[in-house]
Image (cartoon, rainbow, N blue to C red):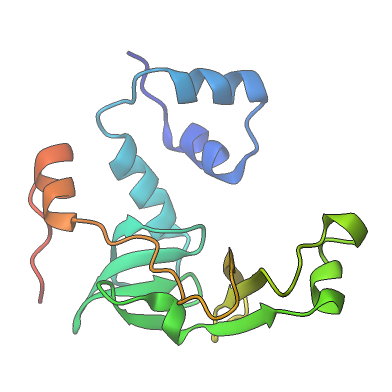
Length: 165
């Protein structure tokens, strides 16, 4: 089984590997330390000291902070306890009328605003677009992902989850 160095994994994260190499990596067995290499690369790219436990989006992480396990953005913005929906602490732009929807889906590509709205969730610290969801107007904000960190670390990574401080 091949093992990939940090540079190759970083290129994979950045989408800069040629497609044949990417396809080979995606379809082959994962090296045992891939997650740790991935996590180390992400940790090097942020300016804050809290340990990344699990990335949950392109710019979002569950981290081990002094005050517990929280969701944090690349820029350092904290969204609170990871067991709560981070989107509730984000800036939210709702595209709920034809004009705003057609800015991104012009003409016949646009959804009917009476049936669907597009919600854009942005970081209040850096205004990076973190996620987009499409839902019927009035539908509750979706809580996408609540990982079982303990099981992931003990059963999948075969190591203990870092202790909460």
